[in-house]
Image: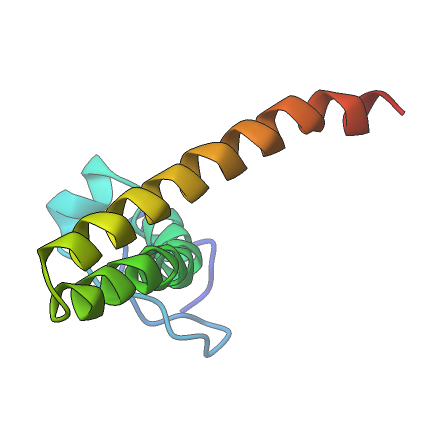
Length: 100
């Protein structure tokens, strides 16, 4: 089928052989499914990385909870203090690095 006679929201078979998501006609009229698919392919690894990054302190606090209540409280306070202090340090030094 030539591109001149192809409908605007035609079938999902791509001419170049690249795999694209196939969606109902009403959904294709509502949103740009190709753009949404491309953004999802970009966002999923970032979401998984962030979840893994925040899972490291969670696991260490969970393991320290097996030692007792005082150890659990100490690990939770230590993790939160390190996170807040590290974040404040990065925020305060960021403008100094961007100006030079």
